Length: 128
Image (cartoon, rainbow, N blue to C red; front, side, top):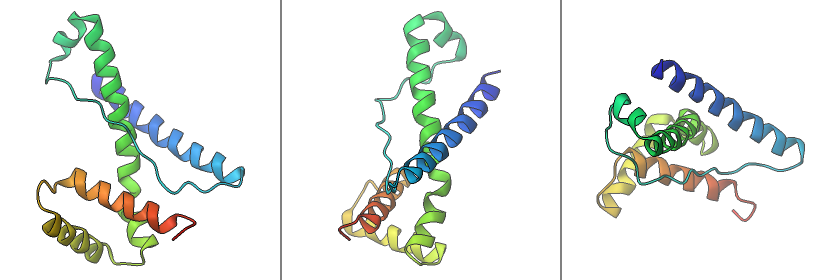
């Protein structure tokens, strides 16, 4: 049941992001970037542990919606990045990875995604 709920939330988040971008376009705006403010996370509780405390249910719900919004944006990030920057996906991955070597750790997927998102936002900004 939880897996079905997560899958449904993921589909709804992807649809909501797409709808929002379409509405902005219809109003003459261009969405150039999106950000999701992440919470501090939560312990690896079991479903039973979450259900045992009402506050945990709200924490889990918040975590779920942040996670699915991130997933909705991640799916298209690298594809859109390669297209916008006119690069082959492998070359883009290499360039972002190389950037991490100059900046130092940590340089995991989160940092790579954030760097690419920032690059795309700057590239698509009217000032660029």
